[in-house]
Length: 451
Image (cartoon, rainbow, N blue to C red; front, side):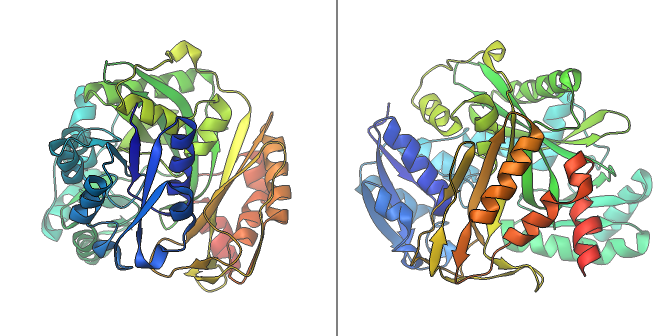
């Protein structure tokens, strides 16, 4: 096992990793920008080192500064968390070249699965169902028009290299395509340095289902069941649950097996997530993409399986074999996660940074809060607006929902606006309670109705 680990991230995921490392007896190094000098992760780590100004490009995204911090502190490994450099193949390769273990797959595997065109080709070879789409990258609006005509509208434009909701546009008609292509391509170029797009047929209505996998360096791969991530706003997840009410025992086996095939096809190592779209009417599921990192919503899988995914990441990266085989994985009960964002939901979800004047974090059986905020903490305006995650577990889905509503009612955050009331509106919605929702739910039944 490593003696010292550098966490190349901030906020709640940095705190989550520090806690897992401490329980494994690993010393930790926190990096931070000037804006994060008073952040909780800098206080919890054994060491903390400033790597630059507030802007991400000058700090958390600056590979040289992150690697220099690892060298100076003699860290043997780097955990990237999610976001920032977590899916940057160049960074993973640089770590390897400098004999620093990157907690995640190799840069080569990232390139295979991070590029949506390459990933699609790999999945076809692995006999994993894929969404009908373009055969390769599309560089011009003229090319896009030809592909869309072949597939039929509506289609989805997606950045070839990237994720996180950037460079994505749904196009319903031929007239919409050219301007949508140009704007999505420009957004992708700004976010990822690559404006190439690819095009998919829209599967609608659909569920967004993802499967958590773990793989070691000896070829052993298991899946930890599925998460339903259909509740999204502008392609950003809002509330997730596990297991999905839309998936029964047979389909769970099929989709889980497909995820394992996908991971084995690229000799995947460490934690990863295979994302699918599920057409509920036909029962057919389609590969969307693979996230080669820990996911924001990993806690709900931990709650229903009892597997500590972050600890497993660290064990795998240190060269240990998986202790688990597929028959060991048992999905028990139900878990829900609500993302808590500092945002003004009455003003188009505008970010709401500022000073937290009062704070009460709920607790009790079946309640977990992953966060890095505290009373007196100043939420900086430079980063993502997510300030925490509320997770509840129940023997049944109804129990998990009831616990979530109770816990949200106790969660008091003074001084900034949050989306807690918006989460209530989801939990109290009759269709959500019945499990009757898909990826259009928030846009069609909540935001539109409240406009």
